[in-house]
Length: 308
Length: 308
Image (cartoon, rainbow over all chains, first blue to last red):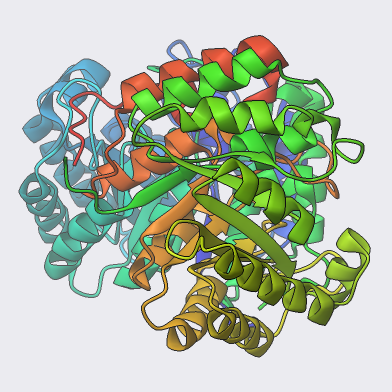
């Protein structure tokens, strides 16, 4: 096994596909997962256990999870919206489940129709259900804090609100905490403020960064988070995603550009960039080439580029 | 006069237009300059004194310079390829002239058909000619070091080569030095290495950064340069530019995204983002909307955004 300095996690199959109206055939999803795993990405959020009537894209969640779990060494993750979703995950033996709460009270209310406190309490119930099922140590329960760096309803979010939410999740037993700039509002200054505040509360729990590149600051924010000691980053192949509040805007930071940045900074990701770039063909075939963005894919690797 | 923390300089009329095959009418160029100046950009590289038979886009250089110099308070800059170009600038009374040398010997040879040393000596002759004409203190002579962070022929460029070139330019009397990542090869790690090395040689001479966003790292590199103390940045409206070696690749960092990054970091640029975004209409009309990129233009300002 090679040493990894920074862990990158693919979220395009969940955060990206939930935005696309085209249903991506299950076989294509599994081909994408297999190819990106073969390129060296070790963790992939493969689906969401939301009710398929809400997002038909995830109607094949069970099949995708089973197919992904057949790849030895891949850390398979699924998003869970609530306890019911978690129970689907427990039943399938998914090794890692991601739950999400919005730091913005208004966003949480509009997004999942309940108060932030109710969402927090649900996470505690999910942890308790896992432990009661004897799955502690076998199922990692991560929780994301979305709109942590800005909200389309509330604007700026107080750093202290994020800190308090992170502390609550840690106290409830979160195995990992993701801080998400859901709308791509952040600049490096805010990233430093927020991550420093969060890290002061989370002890040895891994803290991951989930940035969107909506306003071009995504990779600058990655560099700022690296300065704070963050070593786990979400990204999506071809930047699949977008933002429901800004049609045409870019989505998650682009996985290929993230890996280029990190390897170019001398940080090993375990990912082979040439193989990673070739994976784009799979979602491009299913969703159309126009669905994918990415600077490295257009420009190619620099002459004489040496990975970390 | 408002305080400015970071100086942004528009280079799209030179670095951007030299890549476009469509001749932009002189009136449109002047409208662009006037509108961007009105939005708060205080320095604009408006043209290049290369022979028009080489780049027909700059056939109206004299007219553009005269029109731009009619705007009181605008710092007008023109690129000069050699002593002859400098003399055109002196004759017109252009307050600032930019000269460029490639750190990569191969790139310099292929680009301007002479050795790097010969290009360096030419800069010394330009300084001497300015001083002999009694223009010292009235004409600022800046010199850029292109391919300082990587070259499509040579690959990585040794930091020591950049340092040595910067020291030579400083010794020759350069009033400002620009360090350019001409091909968009850099990551923040290299930016820090190179700028620290350069700053150790340049004393009180302003050092500017000229980044291309070819591989998505442009704004991350800006943040890294800010950490080193750099307070002068080149950019182009809508990222106009591109890279001759990578068709379809993006060009200079996008001015609107740069200003958003800086203002979002609490750094005053003196630029009104809403007015700046409106300026895009002028080059879009002349060159086609497809010529312009930019994340902020697609996504819009965040809810509750407060400039520095």
